[in-house]
Length: 287
Image (tube, rainbow, N blue to C red; front, side):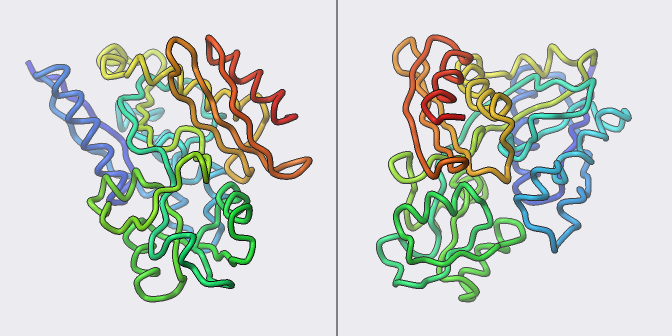
């Protein structure tokens, strides 16, 4: 007997790729699974005027998808974790983090070293802008709206001299060849949860165990550390806060960046559990 699963997703090419990837994982976990995608127009996709950072902070890219789960149109929602606010609707739980792609930001159009003084880099992220200025204070920035393909087109058309995008999205859509420079943690600390797929369902949903079966137990503590820093500091997507966690033997290492209340600073901390590295990062960043 088939197990029917409805996955809520935004309509963008990247969101659909992510939902289909989760569908593959579910079918691999249970051969009886039949997946239907429930495509949702989010308010963030429809709003072409407001800054992306503001919309993400408001949850404009995810709320409509979450509501589809709450009202029963879908069994679970698939998200790009970095777009998901830490404060979500009651009754939902993040039941699975199936995988993480390359977590770094990426330059498209030119490398940081090759851009001439005064060149314009497309990004509206306070986190990216703050760290960019540490390396190239002579560069200008401009808000860049639209999906991945639209942003790439704006670079190709010369609307901006270069742009910063998440490497994960470029790779997932087959645009890895457009990356001119990976901005690893030596240059730019990524957003918490960047590159991570997230599956969200109702806390009491009968298919919860199925969704939980595709969770990556090695990834979850790292994500909990990164997201925990967001929660503990009250920071959001409009804040210049970055965090990336990794395993350092049995310990969790977290590199974090902040540019609030005292200027830009970064710290590397280690701990045995997510809450330990969160506490150490807060202390090191004076947050």
